Amino acid sequence: MDRSVLWRSAVLQAASLTVLALILAAALPRSFFVDWGWLAGPGVWAACALLVASLLSLPALGVLVGAALAGLPALLGVATGAHWLGVVLGVPLFALWCARLARDRDQAAGVVV
Image (cartoon, rainbow, N blue to C red; front, top):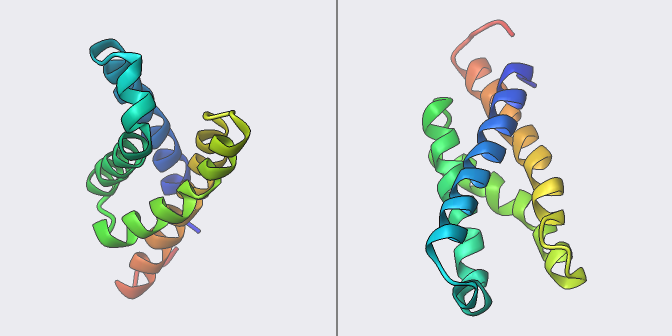
């Protein structure tokens, strides 16, 4: 596991999610999130994951798969009415996935880790 990527991906995902959430909350009415939150949330999560992939030179498809898997805990948060529980659980899982991707990338390239 690449610990540097672990921490950087966690910070980048959390920060980008926070920034986009604040922008969307300021720009859109609450009714948008009531009607379209089921689509907006995963879309923002995926967009932020792609940003992380780009900034950390990770494979986009692999990062999106990890983002989808790490986003599954959000279902628990939605079901219990604690929406941000998904972020609290999902960001560390996403970061672990990214660290594994980086390790696999480095091993394939013959880099000693």
